[in-house]
Image (tube, rainbow, N blue to C red; front, side, top):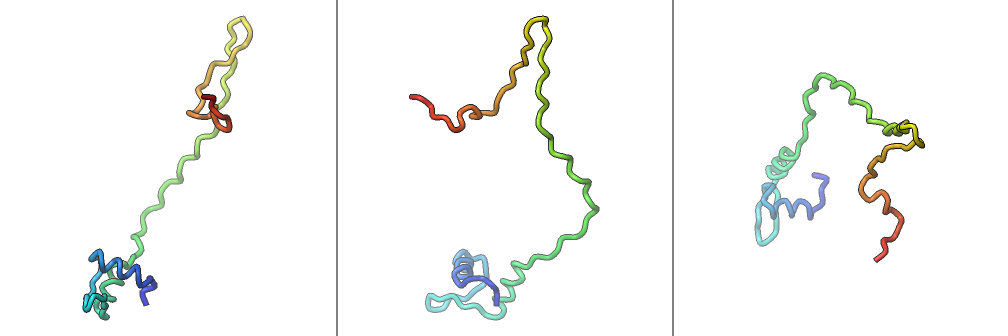
Length: 94
């Protein structure tokens, strides 16, 4: 009737989250108990709200830095890697 396992219902009763009667060490549930359990876990639809604006697009890949022209050989500025990026797939030597 509830669509839950007996163990789930007994656990909720043990935790005192649902109404029950304990007789002779066994959990018993009356029609009123079951109605209260169904009401407790009932989910109603949320009220409709105005449509939210669409989310901003995710940032794309960073553009590659352009070489600096200092009259010498073109050298690109250093860009930090994410932590651990250089260690993937390689073993560290002791």
